[in-house]
Amino acid sequence: MDSCMAGDLLKETFPEAVRDIEEFRRETSITVDAGKIREVMTFLKENEKLCYDLLLDLAGVDFDDRSPRFMIAYLLHSTKFNNKLRIKTTVAEGASLDTVSDIWLAANWMEREVYDLFGIIFNNHPNLTRILLPEDFVGYPLRKDFPVKGADFDQPLQVCLEEER
Amino acid sequence: MGVETAAAASLQEVINWARKNSVWPVTFGLACCALEMMVASSSTYDIARFGSEVFRPSPRQADLMIVAGTVTRKMAPMLKRIYEQMPEPKWVIAYGSCACCGGIFQTYNVVQGVDQIIPVDVYVPGCPPRPEGLLKGIITLQEKIAAEPAGQRNLVSLPWGNNG
Image 1 (cartoon, rainbow over the protein chains, first blue to last red):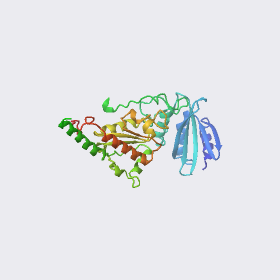
Image 2: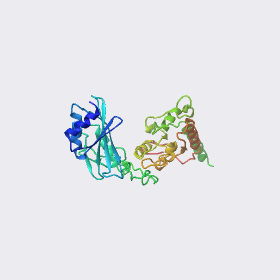
Image 3: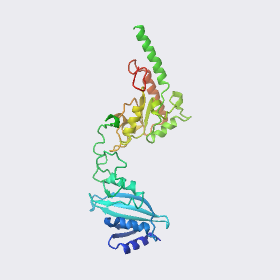
Image 4: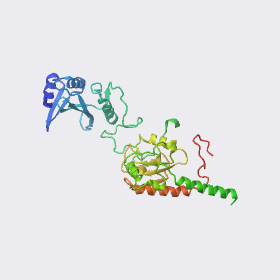
């Protein structure tokens, strides 16, 4: 089964959820409705003609001139048929998205990373806390409106150990 | 100069001599500068010539902390804890531009110089500095230790805080 097949099957099964299918250099990207993401992902994983059993990556993108502002891209791989598929969905600022961390366990940390750097909330995530930045960090650094240097990079740093508090 | 003062001064000299020739670093590396630090203990550069070849796996047994690499804000508490765990007397070498001043990383997640967290004795700039740089840093530190006057540090330090 090639990845074009996934587009046709998805369009057949979720006619109202599939927004766009694009093909570029034999890579298929399918944009789906954020509200249907769990149904679509479960279908892609469990349909035996597709069998996308591996989540390679899950990334956030900030288009600060677009509405809705954020895009989440899921890169899927089928170990059975050895092909890849990109699923995209859009999230508005302040809106949230359902987690897929129970479908692919790999999504757990990836969603935390997206939350950490973009501030996108994933509903029903088992442990949605910061993963890369310190827990008391303020702001979401990969957003386009975040200054590259941060607000206070050149200010003196106070490090207070737990036993000193 | 009284006899006691003279005796204390020469005792201080003996202690400084002993301290400067056995500066044991703690095994601690943060980024690419740590690779240069490891090379410094190879046979080509042979840090053992200066008595610093014994990289201790525990901060409790170490005298010197070579901060080799970029100190991120998330790493800062761990770095400070390791420093606090080292018994007196202890010294710090900031090895590389990042440890000295943040280097090329003028960002929100990098500490702009490890001297914001712990006191630094010798700065070795470079990106990364060559192993000779570290050796020069250690020699400079040895000169600094040899010149320490009496009374600057306790002659004997006990781990439970009852300093002699």
